[in-house]
Length: 198
Image (cartoon, rainbow, N blue to C red; front, side, top):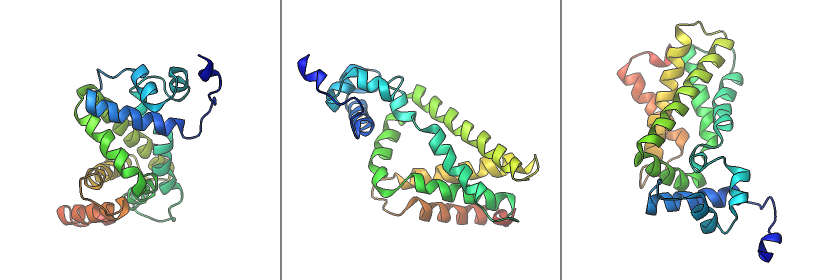
């Protein structure tokens, strides 16, 4: 117990260390079989430190929702006046690409593999996606987009983002998320001619 007294309370990088340890264990042992104690031990930290950063082991995968949403909303708030509803949604997903720099890709790949292997986590991911769509809809409405157009543009933008994100985390992919978003937006315009002007 003596060594625990010397541990720094807010250790730099503790959250990231816990996230990396958790995803590694989730992939090797499975999400259900991994305990908070296992995660803390793997990261070389205490359970108490774990609970300073996360409410439970699921939160390791879903922490930062507000920060994540804030990137999308900032894209709308900072967009020039006079853009169409879909151009505003496109500005939102372009801004969100900043949240996913290249160095985040390995962890994002692991995180998605863990979620894909667990139906309860997939459900939580869908709730996160729905919350993003609702927040983006509200931001578009606040920006003057009328009620029928706001949810349509928001949900379409969120779909474009998720398609691009799946491509971004694919093995061997090295393009930036922003580049991939632009490609997916181009594909959408081919499927629905004039969608980029909506």
